[in-house]
Length: 128
Figure 1 (cartoon, rainbow, N blue to C red):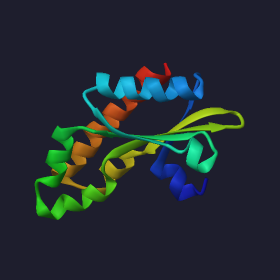
Figure 2 (figure 1 turned 90 degrees about the vertical axis):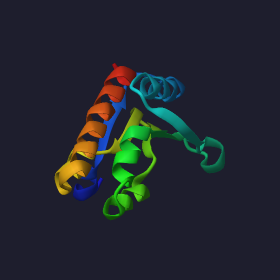
Figure 3 (figure 1 turned 135 degrees about the vertical axis):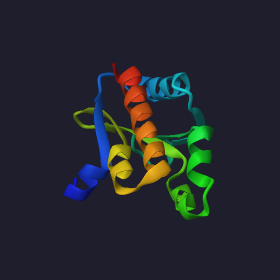
Figure 4 (figure 1 turned 90 degrees about the horizontal axis):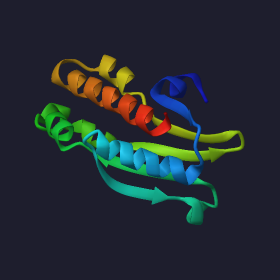
């Protein structure tokens, strides 16, 4: 992965199979107060084991979108976890929200920091 993308994207190897990892991410997201809003299963259409899990937290989304000057964040919504089966195992990819929290100021930075904490908890619950 190119250096800039390796900073923007968080990568975790799963100790579980593909299907189990997808289910565990969905369950962990809901356990941590997030709603699963969509599942993009790309296996049939692309012929590769990749599934994108879309999640949303209404509190965070509302906080990010309440001001016109921060509504650009809508382009990053909903939050996503990509589960991919690679030759050496199953991996989970998500945006590095800690990095994004450092790139903005004020309330939006706080929202991104809380999302980063939740992402960490979701991955810990799902992959642990």
